[in-house]
Image (cartoon, rainbow, N blue to C red):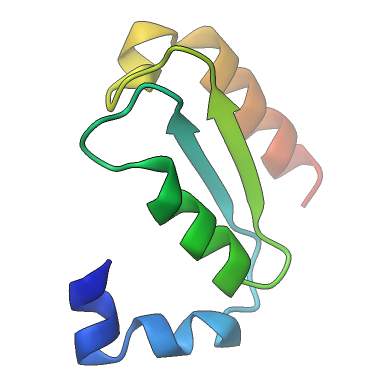
Length: 77
């Protein structure tokens, strides 16, 4: 995340005008929840989903719930 801000990408997140879904596992030690929170707070209208007990590969650990979430998110768009 810090690199994004250094090169200016982080400064442009507020300009996004497309639907954004940010998903994370609560046990992710590679990309901490704080990164997801920074993104969701910077992108207007972004959704945040947390998968309890999921690690960095939560979509491989629990494939059905993220797939359902993504399908629902896309159907609402």
